[in-house]
Length: 432
Image (cartoon, rainbow, N blue to C red; front, side, top):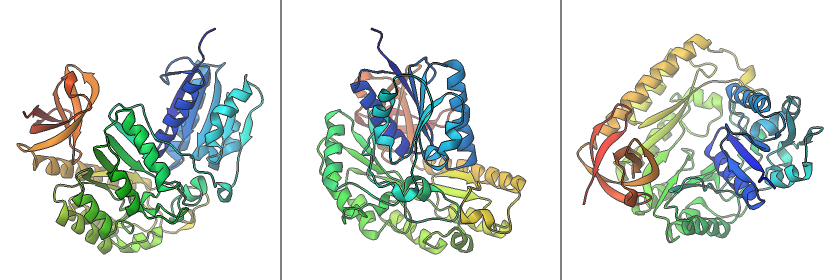
């Protein structure tokens, strides 16, 4: 009998990727062969995102494309768009099952119970009813795993639907997460990226603290590197910074969302810090980890953002010497307070400001990387070979490229950084 085939289409955040990987392992244990999204399959799973209207549109287009190419495949949709707009998705031709974020962990069982295409089944719930924690980590990458430690958010920022889509902040105990980290180590992966919706808010369910989780993970044998995927400025305490600076396993790499460098706009956004507090947190990191890579999220064109407020953001990003910017033009999400706020920013102005920040990001990233040309850093090399070359990331998240050497795959190796190539990677040579 022909082996059944399943494909996964994952949109959005690293958390979704860890969840899709876990769902894929369940399908594989159930006898399925996982295939690429472009291949023919019996089941297509879409793990959706709804952070912007563009993300919603992308999900709809993927569903239609799958159905046209593969009309007999069972199409299952879960994730944040499925949580927020289940009936809209169910109305798209070809969709067989829609599962809320609370039911995501049941996806394999629900698909198996379907057996064949028929009337669309919808499993939906309100945000208040999202109480389950779907434990997950990614395993597709041989060198690196995204480990989910927290889900949901209680912050309710004015522009965001995450608290509707993911429910309240919750987590499983540290002991359970450590057990998963040991599974990752046993599989041979050397690096873990700690992920969550509001990662630093870990402990709401169990009464534990994020710093205690970091200490426990630090002791897991076989894992040589940790990165914290994203942490709110008001949650990155001196204790966390000092611990990461002292630990050889925690990399000098932080992703700390800013959203706006204007304290007035931050107040309208209902963020929980000021521009000055943000700068103070970065100064603390720089004082202990001067080589740290700093990734920053920024929203452009929030209602009320004039040129003055935009330039406050621009100058703050320059002053903290951000290493890379993730730039998002403001997108109205139904049901959020920002929808009814006055002083909307025209799309052409937002587009122009995005362009200015993209240029700034390129300049700041090059400025950061140039400081390390000629120096020796450690890099973890990936298994993929491209035209006789292999790639890896340094401890402070610079992408390096060296001639392919199979013996260096999934090893942490000293390299000397030499020069930029045409794609912005840093050509390097292995030392010793």
